Amino acid sequence: MRLGLAAVVLALALKGCPGDVGYVEIRIVPGYVVPPLVLGTTRVDVRRASTVLRERVGPARLEFERDGLRFPFCEFDVRKDRIVTVAVTAIGRDPRCKVQG
Image 1: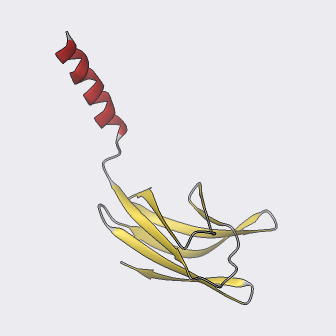
Image 2 (image 1 turned 60 degrees about the horizontal axis):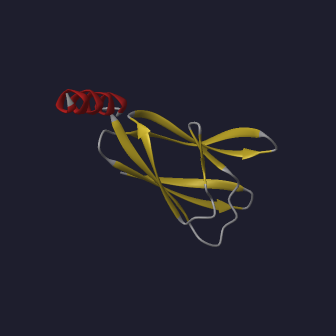
């Protein structure tokens, strides 16, 4: 009985894990004021110097918010079991990004 229950729980847990995922590391260079960032539907904490997010494999877009609107400024591909590093700086009022990986 317990073995069957354990097998069912394990099967449900594995089914809930997406198979094709990659990771996005967002590094914000200290000293710059960066507007709120959004990756897909996830808001990025811009107060932290580095954030790692788990994303689906495929094209991704990093956007910033200004006056309630989202503006795309960085597009890149997320690859399976890989880390894509996005370095974010701000020049004037506009954020810039550099993608590695």
